[in-house]
Length: 390
Image (cartoon, rainbow, N blue to C red):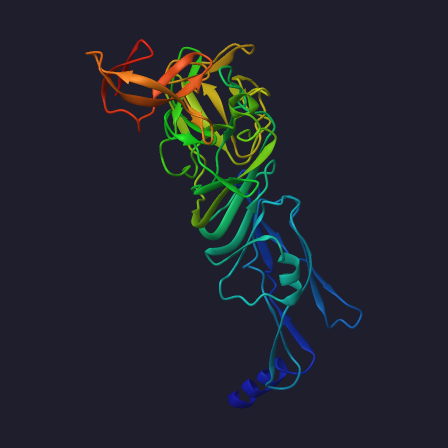
């Protein structure tokens, strides 16, 4: 009798026109601040009651995990199983930087594949081409590897030789390997004697109401680390080297995209804090001004930027100057852009003997430090001036 009962239940379970679907059908999404929300997916049946449509609307989410959405199974004849793909009405996030996570082994329906086309999709722990858009927030709940990733930033103002300005803050979730503008590869200065195209400086400390910065001497811009960046305007070397008004693209290949929060670099009295999300609710914060010449009190910072907090507080009308480890407020007088004509000078030793010539960086202040490629360490007389090469 028990066996007959089991068979009857089995037949009833597989009878025709019985549709089964997971009752707990949901996805998870995160906002730009990393706060998650579980969202149930509503079901809609067509007039025949045969098709089930899942409506997915993620609003302005920064990341969405679609791997938790269940499939639907239906039996049409006894003993025959058909795994049906969901028919989606999918509305992508209004945030172009949103990441869409799916399982590595999940077969994506044609409808869903079409909806995800051109978006930042992470399958398992690997992504194809990831594009990050300036001005929109970013968050990832998981580390993943991107085949390619790029972020573009417009530099409306350039740095003026001997004056300064044009500085912007930047922080990115990946190690920047290359930087381009108009399809041309660019190099940042690792020191004052390089021939390069633009400047990347790291925060090194403070002195009273002054933030101190120095050259980034690494061969990469490190993930999660905030920097200040500037490009030259025409005052440096004319239109051939000016990057003012151009967009720089920060790129990497086969690189880890980190889920770690941007770093806070601390000194005795200040914190230099990166943010991917941006905020308009900062307190005791100083953001770089529109001219890019100093940090000014402001409660708003854009995504992929950084700001300074003074540990012991400052008056609302105060400002934080940008100084460099050489003691100047521009910090760039001794550098020479690539393709800039080099001025040569006769070089003498302390005994008055001419030992050759040396290429120097011509500046508005006169003779700058010798190029490291020209002279060995020592003391020299150049244009009647004593110069120490270290």
